[in-house]
Length: 459
Ligand code: GDP
Ligand code: GDP
Image (cartoon, rainbow, N blue to C red):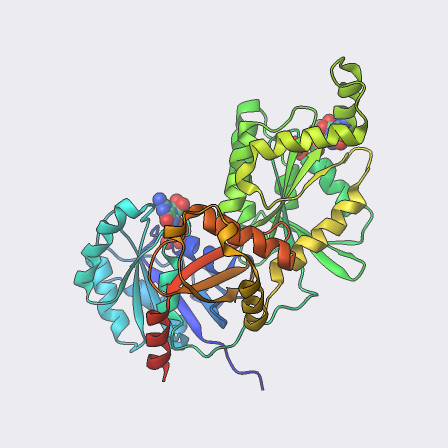
């Protein structure tokens, strides 16, 4: 019999960031949606993993407190079921407003369940704002400053929430569908590319449970593998005015990225990479999505280059090289993303894009065993990083905490942040050694003292 995974319930007042936190923890890996009578909004379940511990998450969402009555009774009636099953509860609060009477009332009522309770003081978007979280200590429960939107402080919160959970990695099956978001500015060729990718294959159109009602996904099977193109209706939607279209492209990108493993950032090669392409790429990086940069309309770019005195003698390969340098310079912060040049209109190189998608999707789910990782670590020359020697941590060992995206925990002798260039060095070496193509790599630093304390507590 398959043992039940531990369940973490997310509760809190509306607008504090519960669903943002839920999305950050589970991405698209939401499994069951219950639609029980008397519950106004669906309860959404998803799966997550931290430090080799798999668990389920439920967003109790849509719970309206009766502010006037002072007691958020409705919150409880609706969330009761989830809370009864939960192994840990995260109460999300808004650090900008400080603890409200409703938060205090929630804490009092949550204690009745006798479950470990953690207060996540959300919207602490920079280290400078950490102080705002200390006001929540008055609630009498452990407080964690986090930014659900920017992914800050989540590791400390998860360390504590999952501390007592059994060590059991999440099962990822190779047949699990890859969720793909096609993002980019208006007119770069997103719909044309979608039609190419989906066109020849047998496709199933289905709405994804637990998402906005108008989001319609398209799932295709290709050579035994499944791909889900997120919100295909949204990709095809066109806005009336140019300004509205620009704005819509950003809103859509952010929404689509929440449910995607992989982003295809489409840009127009005949125009080059613009500032807005770069900011859309930034959202994909922030969401932890893997990414492939698709320089579309390559047919048009080549045609233009042939008509230009400066470039007409260059071969297509040489041109592509020159282009790639320009694209890299503009998108330096997403250095992990491979770049492809293709034409959605003619279909040229579209098959190669599928092969690259497979490789990137595989990389995202890769798990490197701890022994192998440390054998590798002992063999690389850490002094080759450009970080100042005095800033180099004394490394004890490295372990992969989770996949999707690959997240590593580096245990060091003393607590200190990694120097930026050392972090980059480790990420690049890991990417080369284990073929983590196209995926961001996260590295979290822990001191051994804390890890040992954790082990002792688990007994
Ligand atoms: P819920 O009603 O509790 O599920 O809240 P949502 O997750 O829908 O978030 C409510 C609003 O807060 C949205 O506009 C989010 O973009 C915003 N939000 C969520 N997390 C953060 C954060 O870490 N920082 C900031 N500045 N805003 C956030
Ligand atoms: P979207 O707004 O990003 O979805 O862009 P569309 O897919 O609607 O494409 C915008 C325009 O660019 C249309 O006129 C397409 O025919 C054209 N287009 C798309 N891909 C290519 C391509 O690879 N080469 C050329 N020359 N034109 C393309």
